[in-house]
Length: 248
Image (cartoon, rainbow, N blue to C red; front, side, top):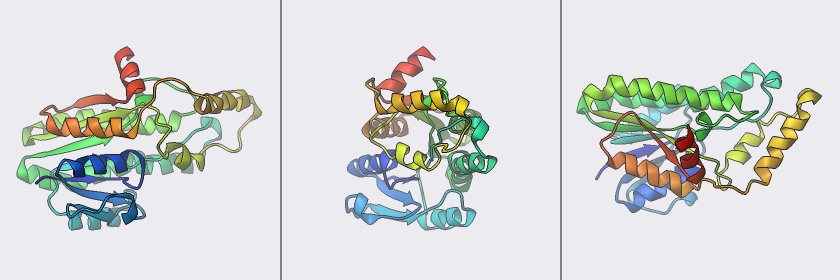
């Protein structure tokens, strides 16, 4: 029985990915910044571990407790929305600490065991905003675009160790907690000149009627790429992401 470690499992994509792998007879290590046992079904194949991907000590403890892992899904992430001009550099660093450096740190922590066994899969959950440019998301987009570029290069250097690496690109997912966790990072004060753009973008999110991504879409794609033999993959997840990917 194989084991997958998934970050950011308290809600959204991570939660659905954990459920999907459990249903397919994998051992699942579901990590959360604040562990909650009630969000996942009870199973002898499930372990819930505390993990803050921005904390090196927390990463060390989680990796030690996890033991042997066959697949790593770097899903933990935070959102941000607002004009870059009024975004503090502390806020920029906060987003990169989770979305970019957290993904890199988790990858680096598990690479020694993958390399020693000459096997393993690393799946980094990025975003389809790296395919379609949107306003007021420069920091979030940059943090995810960095992961896409990082992963593409990393895949090449790990091929000789039979370690497969790639990205999954979800689209807009209204049912997830992205909007909620991004709310604290939505610009509250900004020059009046940006007001029209802010109102238009927020209204567009609230009244959006087009294709969207569901958490189950992402879980299915993550599962599929663990079963394939491809590396350096970049796979859209969700109807809107698939549309954007085809046009990119």
